Image (spheres, rainbow, N blue to C red):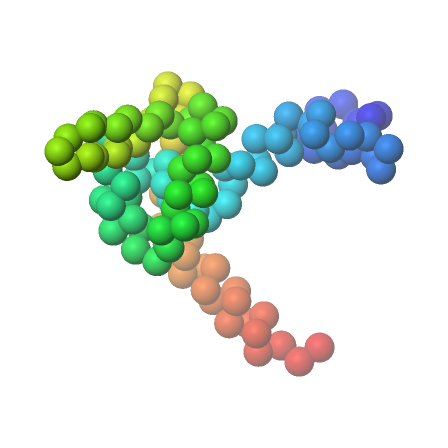
Length: 130
C-alpha cells in the first residue's frame, strides 16, 4: 500500500489482505461498545462474571461470554476459576489490557465532557429537512 508521509496506516487497497493491517486487527476486537465497557469495568481489579454483568447492566449473558472469550483470546484479560465450592470464575486485566484501558480513559473523560454537544448536534441533524 502506498500512503502519504505521516498518514495513519489505516488504508488498504482492494488487493491487500485486510488481516495484515495491525490497526484493523486490533480495532476489530477492542473498539466495540461491549469490549470497551468490559475492559473499563476491570480497571480496578479482578471481577466475577456476575459482577461484570451487573455493572454493565444491559448486556446478555451470551454476549458477555462471547466478548470475554474474545478479549481473553487476544491477551487483554485472564480467566481464573476458583473450584469452590461454589465454583467462582473471575476475570482480570493483563498488562496488555491495562495498557489499553489507559488509552480508553481520556476517551471516557472526553465523552463525559462533550455529551451535551453531541446530543445538541444530533438534535440539529434530526430536525434538518434537506
